[in-house]
Length: 380
Image (cartoon, rainbow, N blue to C red; front, side, top):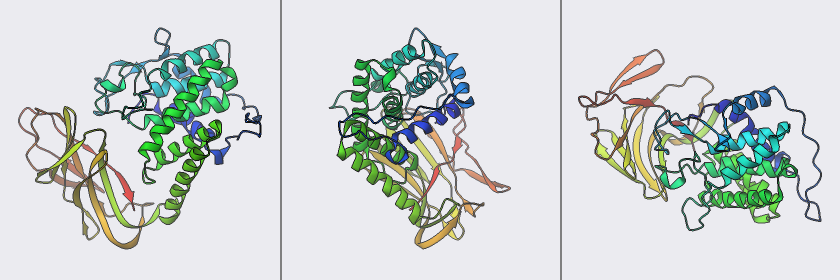
């Protein structure tokens, strides 16, 4: 996903994860139920000052949130590129940074931001997106093409960090609202229960649950989060060290669509469609191989998700060394279409250019060209 200021945001979100994980420093309550005294935070560093300067310029005092120009990635949001938006995640990151700086007026601005973001969370316990936030405050969950369930994890981590590091800087009523929002986020995280293959979200959601469990004195949340972290650690250990060498019996890439009432179909000629609401994604696959193994493209579905897998290897356990280029040819093109838009019919033309594959589609007359997207590789 593409967000302006993403690198700056990612640095502070990493801090949120570290603060959220019990194994990384979340201080448990003492016997009276109160939080043990935490050591003082170090003074702001250059990275934090850089982030603050970036968001200070983008703060909208009327909305009480960060404002920026939207860059559409073609899914989740229906807003066009260039629309003025008020991002929820980035606004929470800014609130944490303000409290970290803690100069005159920072705490009041941070409190206002947090309150505004909390109002955008889905608080309906009967809703399938209960506990999730929209990308933008000015595009509610109900108006998104498909809500991004990861926002329960991202925003939940920010709420946990606010309660762990900055509770004494916030009004009592707002702290209560933060706890309610965090509790809703953990409900969404546990309901979704992503597997260890979705590494960053598996770790982030586990950390949020552990932190919330310790803040609330909820042993079941702590147990769930720690077990989930142990599964991720165990999976990493089973599949090799972090030097790029993995042992696996199954190696594939996946295009996945998650949401309510999602559908999928095979169109023939190596084409698949994943559908949600009034739009659908058409995946045009190319012949590929991993060494002597042909890539097999396969449609699948489970619960609230549909997907297309490009299976590069499935067989006896073997080692894959991703620390250097491997002999893999795999490509697919993506069309994001409304229901009444025509699908490109002509098969792709594939050529070589050094160590890469060039893929070109010839769509119908007057249709825009297809883009080429690279999926994420997973090993099992």
